[in-house]
Image (cartoon, rainbow over all chains, first blue to last red; front, top):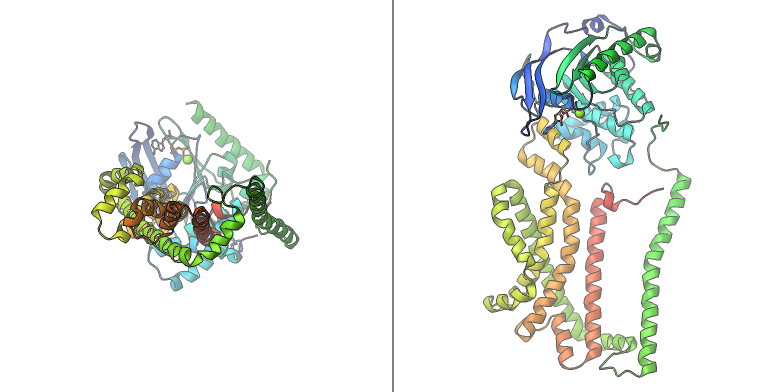
Length: 270
Length: 284
Ligand SMILES: Nc1ncnc2c1ncn2[C@@H]1O[C@H](COP(=O)(O)OP(=O)(O)O)[C@@H](O)[C@H]1O
Ligand SMILES: [Mg+2]
């Protein structure tokens, strides 16, 4: 099962996708979040995410990665500080992929992917084309009428990604989307996600606890530490595109992984 | 390191037919095994009655009960229809009331706080003890009996539907919120489908309970009730020491209960077999 999209050749726009090339899309300013039970999940978080960046939030579990992502999505409110978007985002401009596929078991793959459009009261006929396109993007065109239980874990995750893509979001938030998958499936989905990101013009914020995954995917890695959740390192990953199996075995990749690992170790020690 | 590759879980044709055979064998066993038990018990019963020469007013032989069932069919059948009608009306009212109240409770915490305790009171008070009161206060006997049956059938539907409506996946709720879903959209597209299996579970219990409720009410009402239901016939047969007819009536009641259970199991399967764990066959 492979992506319907061919890998785009490197163009000038690819270079423009460097760090915050045309102003940040979203900016977290001194953001803090304290839960009702007193847990300080985040403290003094400053983070600007540029258009077309692929930012990974990397850190030990409990350091507030999910909380940060939910704040950006607007699913929770910051207790301190604020979150500013460059321009007003419409419904559907933000896509969210959870760690679990989070599909409606009673609905077919097609109906699951159509959900965001349905909630915006877009007519079934109008939704047909975008749903098909999103399914084709993740290579599941033939499975439109299947039910989630008939799919493997990796396929369910693809459906979940297609659902997030169907509204053509400007910002895609992913919370450890591949953590529950086996390694082979994960590597495959990493490649597919990268190809999609390079072909489309979104910004991705990707939460992970895997150093290797974050170095492979990102243009920038934000390392976080716990108690209270905060940013301890912000590492640009200036590795060339396209990234593939060769990159995974390159010296540069190894060097970067070592550097990020060291930052993560410092984060966990502090 | 995991080495499983992604695969669609549709099975190969060969495996499918093999699995089909196993399933078919299981279906046959499901019918054959209880039938065999029933036959054994009936034969033993028949033999016991004949060998010990037990009089039919103490324990009638199965053959005698069967003959009585055929002979008094013109009396028993219309009575059965009346009891089934009572149970059906009660169940319909229980579905409307139970689902309706569950929806109200899910919309407003205040409604839940103020009304749910009374639903519990209604549930824990034995219907046998309320039935005489209801029969006093409600003039129309049919209404009174239906009301009694409704009281027993109502609670499982209410509590199961409430549980189901509150069980929607948290991530899915977040997703609905992210896309700005309206309350009615969340109800229609998320809460109701989540609640369906729970509701059907409640319905299966309530189906049997509505029959029990109808029977209890008829017993309590006696001649003051509708006077023609199946439970009344059993009671009447008891007064007249017509023990074979008592057995025939009880047999019919039991079969009706089984039929109701099968009916709702089938309905459950029909609605859930594409997606819900409870209705999925396990393929190996
Ligand atoms: N709803 C909540 N109520 C109370 N504490 C929470 C809640 N959600 C998360 N936390 C706490 O906030 C901290 C950060 O959690 P989270 O953002 O989930 O971390 P991560 O995703 O990095 O593992 C943890 O200590 C967690 O226990
Ligand atoms: Mg998390």
